[in-house]
Structure formats: structure tokens, C-alpha cells
Amino acid sequence: MKIAILNNLYFPYERGGAEKVVVAQIAALQNSGQEVFVVTTKPYGSRPTIPGGPRVYYLESQYFSLGGWPLYLRPFWHLANIFSWRKYRRLRAILAAEQPDRVITHNLMGLGFMAPLAIRRLHLPQEHWLHDIQLLHPSGLIVLGQEHRVNGLGARLYQAAVRRLFASPKQVISPSRWLLSEHDKRGFFLSSEKSTGPWEKDPCPTAPTKGRRNFLFVGQIEDHKGILFLVNAFKKMAGNERRLVIVGDGQKMKAAQKLAGSDRRIEFRGRLSGAETKKAMAEAAWLIVPSLCYENYPTVIREAHAAGLPVIAAA
Image 1: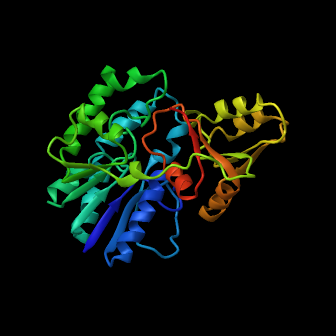
Image 2: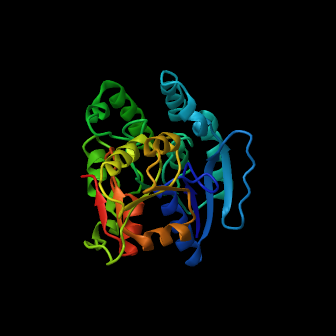
Image 3: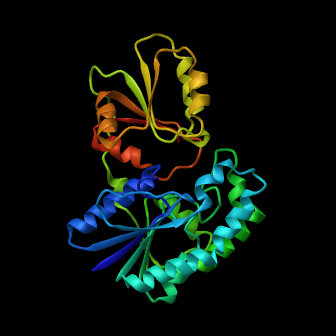
């Protein structure tokens, strides 16, 4: 069976948990003997090189520079992303040439939300995996104290356009009941088969391994991940017996380092490989997930469970 995987980010541009899910999914499919190819995005003018792995089609996208755009211009980018005929035609041509037996879609921000229309018009079965609320709000985030934004007039118009383009894929898979319910109550995927993954059944360690004293943060160094809140809170802790180890990168790295100042108990390790992150987890007493946005099931929590590492997380 030939399977197409669509996700907006892939090597070497991966950022977070959704990309880890995609990589694991590709490996599982290939190990079971399936033929897999990937459609994703890349910055304009870049020439990524893939060391082995599946065939990859890269579509150029301004998604990578969006963070540097003025706020008043971003709605225009999102409008273009919803109705990108150029990406629609390119994606339809790829799928028509490849003729996959099945299409699995993940995050499509930057690939264009007309992708499901292209899939549907080629009569290909689509399986969609939810990772966040990017179909409900262009930011993909519900931030604490700003819950009303996802129900505002602009958000409802956005949802109406996206909902019409997505229609009802054959199957929709969500990592949490909460995320699925947020889409259900806004009329998404009315006739799709829906399910939640096995994530919520994972056992959660409750006590740290004796002798470990480090708090560990693993993730994007961004406001909504609560990194500045975490550094500020840790600085108020007395004593030198604890350390805060921060793994990851992002736009708030310099701000976090400035806030940490001369506190030698706070260590920034930057972005690490999977093996290096596992080693950091093996040395930690707790994983800290201080998100200020509504998460559904961060991949890092599941990785911590697998490592036997207890988690302290924002409610």
C-alpha cells in the first residue's frame, strides 16, 4: 500500500511534538512494509537534504517567516493560507501522479487548508490527525485568560471557511477527548469516524527516583509555553540544592536567559537530540510543563512517562 503523509513541518525544520508523531508514524508504516512519501513545506530559497528515509516533496511557504510579520499583516497571510490555489494545484498534481491508496494529514498550516479539497476531488481516503486548535483559530492556541478569542466573530468566520474545506474526512484521530470535543461543538467532522489515541491510558509515575534533584523543562522557548513564568518562579526558590535544566530553543531564548541572569542554578542546554534529551530525563527528578496555553497531550509528557519521570504540569 502507498501512503501519503502531509504535515507542514518535517526534517530539517521540525519543531515539536507533532513532528515526532509524524516521524514515529512513518517508521511504523515503513516497518510494516508500506510505501510512504511526505508532502511538507520549506522556506523560500532553501535546499534541504534528506539523509535517507521516505521521498519528500517540499512546497515553498512563507510560514517560516510569519513570526517576524507585523501583527496587522498576519490575518492576510492566514486568509491566503486558507485559499491557496497555488498550493492546491501543486498538491493535487503530486497526489494525482503518485496515486496513493491512503492520505494521512496532520498540521496543514502553511500547506494550505484547500489540501482536503484536493484529496476529496481525487477520491482518496483521508485520515486526519489533530494536534492543536489551528482549525479553530489561526494562532493554534487558546491562552489562559484569552479563552474568548476562539469564539469571537473573526474566529467564527475562520472556522466556517476551514470547516467547509475540510468537510468530513473518513477518519479523525485526536490525542485527547478535550481537543476532539472542542471541534465537535463547533460542527467539525460531522460524519467522520472519530477516536482518541491510546495516550490517555499511559501510566504516570508519581514519585521521583531517589537522589535526583533537577527540574527539567523540554520544549519550545516561547511565551505560551510558560518559560518566563517558570524561570521567574524558580528564581524565588531558596537554596542551592535544586537546578533547573532548560532544553529547547525558540524566540524567547534571549529573554529567558536575561531573566535568569546570574543564577547559576539555571542551565540552558539549547536544542538536543532525542538521545541527549532522554539522558537529561534520566538525570532529572521532575519534568515541568508550565504551559500558559491549553495543551491537549504534549508528546514530552508521554516521553517522560516512558522514562519513568514524574510530571508537574499546569492544570
